[in-house]
Length: 310
Image (cartoon, rainbow, N blue to C red; front, side, top):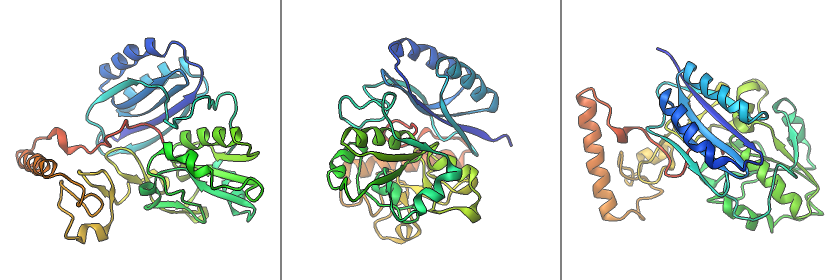
């Protein structure tokens, strides 16, 4: 069976013609049966897509003509982990919600995955995970600080708790590199000086750093149907909840609040009865389709927000 290639990509670059690129990208992806999500804004491009080897190569060729410094990485899946293709126009390719933050003009220092261990092992370095709390729960770097945010827009408020005199060197990371790159730009705007970020994000680190040398603990959450990946970007062991998209642990599966396709302990108390009933009906349709050997559109899990590099 041929593997499905999953490509994660982004670049901060002035993109005044981003509206003109939308139909061209959508047409190219539809022609090659590529699925996933691409975001375009004046500050650049951000996306995660999946397709055959030939399809992804065609898309990459097109993108590299427009984005010469594209941050690009590949992993794989057994089947396409998205059920549609979206090319969206946005105000930001990753939403921080603070005007004037421009990583293209000012950002922290890139650190290659091969040099990351030395940096974060230094006791004078504050290692900061810029991802959301549900991502951190299933894996992070040893000794990293969890900001306990539920969205990236909460990150500026968290920064208020940091001491410029105490935290003289800060090393940040995220899934694919885009959030931590923008986070370094924000910290520099707030007067922090020695700010670093992991080039290519956790995904690149897990790809190139051998498990025996790794300081990563757990798995890495990804915003698509695979839910998580591990070292070597092999498929992880987590499922996600249809009700809230939260990754589900083995303990969650044993909870009385877990109902397959409907709810989990993280969302059980907040789900409206109408939502619960519609989820049960969708799950019933999925099960019937599976018995008939068909693929129901709801069977492919996808985060409710755009599936893009994080």
